[in-house]
Image 1: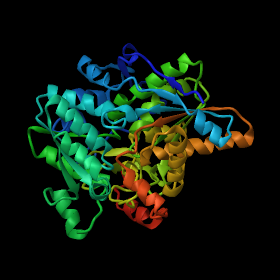
Image 2 (image 1 turned 90 degrees about the vertical axis):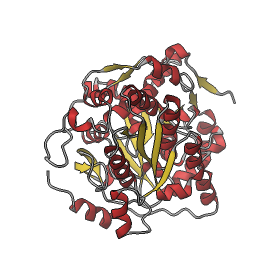
Image 3 (image 1 turned 30 degrees about the vertical axis):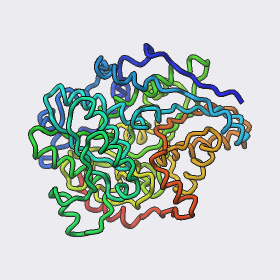
Image 4 (image 1 turned 135 degrees about the vertical axis):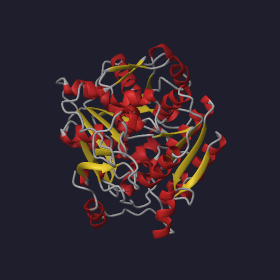
Length: 450
């Protein structure tokens, strides 16, 4: 069976990022200062972010230029290929056409360098010496460690403890690129010590790791904080994915009916979908699906309200679908999706019914991952396997209904550093965690009524 691989030349890498805030029917409510509960301004963010990123965070401009220094590094792996999944289609017996945009070709093995590179660049330009950040599964930490090495920045990573144990090779990748990696919660920050006093065996969470990294950055003048998802400027940088995909579909005379990405904080879903959402907002008929874990179902089970982005309450209040900032999800292998909230942009678009969401238990997700690996030859990361699960279900529905549709998956990373997860699946050790409604209700009850 002939492989369909759609490639672009280096000259066709997008020269600008697309800012969906220029076209959204409704913008998210403004972030609020955690102390005053008043809308924040640039000065409130300047202790931990360079002004260039603050300007992007608040910008309403539709197109933002990609600096030449960032473009030079993007060419190490961009443009990324778009494949048609002929073998998966045949195995499913579906009339659907399934395409996947493969971001696992980056040096870090995921989509994350699309934003770590510009974030490191802008921090370097601002005279920053060190970056403090967090990571769940290690994809973001690896990407930031790589970017720090390329721009001469020291990097400190607070890695969620359960993933620190599950994914040692991601930690080794970070350390190989020169980063210092701590299992979070630690005893070196106030936020970490507070949690350890209550629960010495805490598995950690992304919200807690964010607290530790923000505290670290705020307490050192030469250090800034860097986030791999959720924020507007992160979603902005990721739009190179969808912009390239649109060009690639033009080459084969196709256009997707359904665009699917896994969703934790929302960066890879934003990256692939926002350029297509521009068309949807302006009248195009298509569906965008966020695929999330059933054990951390922020969009499908969370509440749309102001919440902190971290456990300790150091970040501004953000409008998001949230399970409560101190909710600690079960230790599923899709560590990059274990976040209590979603990007304010993704949340607003979901609230306005421009995006759909579906939640999946991890055993059925790994079933889809195995089927994809056995047909398309790529072992996907556990996070992006959620998008594969959603795509397979949509393709089977096309088969049942006898309809031909075109489906696009953002295959946001490979799983070659996640093989312990596959070993646990083969050994029957994976468990489908039930949605812990009582714990989420308890966490939401603690939030202030803003």
